[in-house]
Length: 132
Image (cartoon, rainbow, N blue to C red; front, side, top):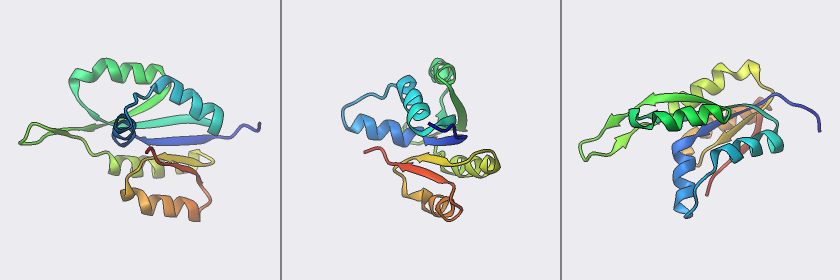
């Protein structure tokens, strides 16, 4: 198989919630191997809201081969924590644009429509993976 320099940009919250809604838990280490073997992903950017108590999770994700990009979280009045990573994912996809052959976007969020449309137009979209 030819070696490509493909990057993955992963909306971790969207991925995690979609997998849990199916009653499953994602094995992030195996998912990283899958991305490498199936799609020739050389760098996998994982966008996640930062919660200090989850420091060991972030360390493990980095050890498993992810480049973890943090978004500060907000505590909402009802006590829920919110860390929307949409802007960071789009920005990093474009910052890294000259460094990859193709991009794999992992999200089920329609907010990325314009990014996906642009990557298709430029022949830079490898695949849109929608976790459901």
